Image (cartoon, rainbow, N blue to C red; front, side, top):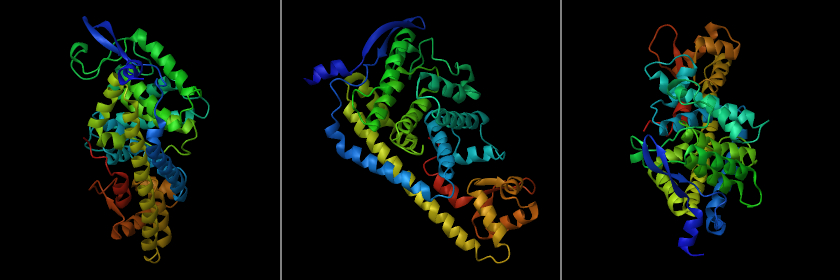
Length: 390
């Protein structure tokens, strides 16, 4: 098949619609899987690297104390990064301080948006145990995502019934206009069917990359499409058993390479260049999994090194070790929280914090005499890599 013929069957088409009182060309994506089929052979090397990196990441997390520790932190890191792509200015420090009731100085809407993302993500992961990835689950997650804050007026949990657009001040000068509502419903139906089809024989990683672009192109909600579209990759790979723990999140990679990312999305839409997108996507999977593997390794070594230091302190070693263990789950914490987490009373907790401060493991972040909050510095530094706002 010639390049032009392939473009005609793989690229979408435009259809005129009226939006905001003006006639515009809305884009309708071609159905999945792409025709002619994706050239898997040309992607084999990248595919193998991505699969290998995912396997290593699954393995390293078993070394962390508590199966959910790394997941707890990485879910929050992804929430911060994905929300930053949409323009929020909150950092991982802001979110964790907010969760520990020590928030100060950040726009509350930004932090609430990130916190909503955490809720939506955890809800979706739990719901997958009883409900397959589906349009229904996407709507339920969207309701969590836009539960409060700036998105609360954008029909949480409901597919749009009006025209939206990307870039520009109105549909007529937009960079991209997704399908009109009537066309969108058919696109969504075919999208959901592709999630569960087996006839194409496509590997789960390849399907995840296809699904992400298709969702972003359909843009079925008035707000929150980008965040939900990135999360769909992880949910689909979990559903397919490709990853055992939901630790693969692409937002840092997409944030770092966002200009290329947006360029490739448009190349798929206009020219059907799925292979170029999938090469980028697989590189992102490998890069993301390798970064998370490296971070998990460094966290394991950090906890061991800090425990060894604490064991040198003498008669307060027991309470200091217990507080240190608690701060692996509460890297921002006050005395009251640490009392609850350790079962110790306030005096030994406070003594332990003084020990950890002296060893430069934690630092006090409020500057207050009462209601002091402590940060597990080196741990937070590893987790926060890449989370400086755009």
